[in-house]
Image (cartoon, rainbow, N blue to C red; front, side, top):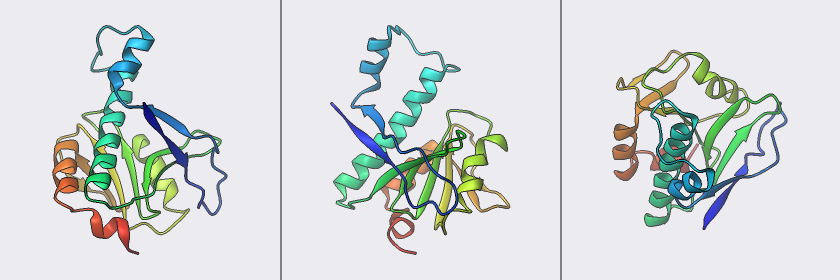
Length: 160
């Protein structure tokens, strides 16, 4: 029916939330249970579904290619969050926005203090692919998925 995403526990200085996140196998089930008949592009439900979609693509890739990636998430007691950690090497934040703001990158900036990362990535609907001065890669989701399915993150996920 779904899976649990366990919290990342390798943080050096900030205590993280210890409760797992639960994902149903299909956002449609979640929408039906919540009574939603449609999903507005600007709603929180859309953001949740978009995160769900990207997360399931990463899980599918990992399974299909037999990568055995350890997937987790990070959230502090103060609500700072990174949606996905892959093998303690890649930190990924997923946003349904078309315009990434500095505030949206906060989790990826703060988690840089907690460990040495091969990549920190923001996946979104923002059409401009770029890397900022802090080393955060902002990748439009179609490019992210193409890179993922072409094995473009394998080395970063599996080595330091």
